[in-house]
Amino acid sequence: MDSLYIDKVLSGDRHAFSYFISNYKDMAFSVALSIVKNELLAEEATQEAFVQTYLSLENFKGQSKFSTWFYKIVVHCSYKLISKKNLQQVEIDLDEHDIEFNDNALETMMEEEQKQMINSVLMRIPSNESLALRLFYLEEMSIQDLCSITGWTNANCKVILFRARKRMAFELNKEINSLSYGRGKR
Image (cartoon, rainbow, N blue to C red; front, side, top):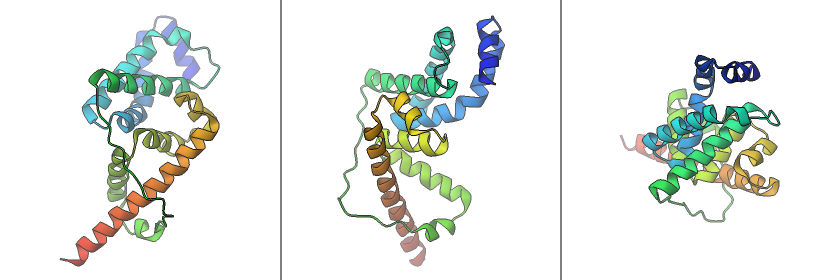
């Protein structure tokens, strides 16, 4: 379906580009947010990514999926914005302990609370880990696509995903425990 709209845009139908905006804006924002850690900057990076995509659509050769090519632009625009704004990112150090995650506690929470908690944790973990989790799990991209978008090696990608899962589990467990203790004090 993407190729049909690419052809329309390249043939001069500027309105056909709205297809890409409506289909990719939410995930593009999510990817940008995982990198810049600020909603206004994520909006700016997303907008810039769509502009860059529109301007360079003729350079898309179809060697990868459109989404892979597009998210690579989103990642590039996000990192470019960080360097332009000279933002400092906080990295969280973890102890090297094995962390067990309690799935049952997560199942007891309402769906909205789960989403808020997950997004809150994704905002706190390092950008590369948040990006890897969002693309791999939310966008269901392959390791190969993830490597193509980020420029990471296959091995590095797997290590980042492993660390991201571990950190995510640790942070979610911490959130769940703080909620449990908070409810017990009432």
